[in-house]
Image (cartoon, rainbow, N blue to C red; front, side, top):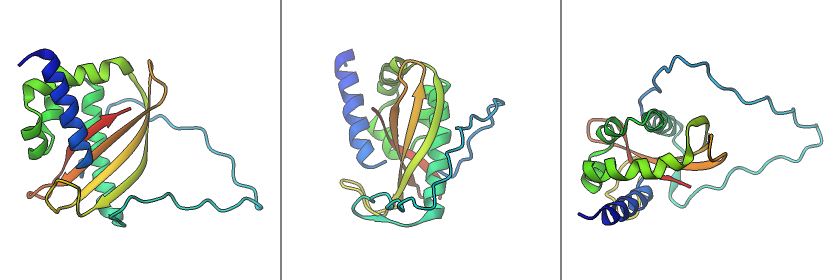
Length: 177
């Protein structure tokens, strides 16, 4: 398979898998946690903020959303460490069938290296769904992270996780923009 075709196949698979986008606790890195400066308290006259819009088909399930977010974050830490093989191994069966290991190992460095080193990541909205287009019904959580890298100060990473038959949440899709 030609390298340009492999990269195109990886990109297409990641985009398709993203439409289908964790219960692992993030591994302890031994590094101090980064915290954002505290936001000023809203003034009493402040207008209430409207809730974030939800995607069609999203269902409130805080427990699943938290599990999906934890698994997605742990998986992203593997990418941050450039541990591409472990990230592929920790992915869902559908992900591994869609993106062969060789394609993943050739393509993911090309996706991540332009960002540089990870500096900070903040989880954003997590959405739980029972259905995703082109996928069997199941439990899916898509999490958006706003990440800061040394070569790119704002990257939105979207990670979709699925609860597999063994009850574990695994990554089934990833995009970074």
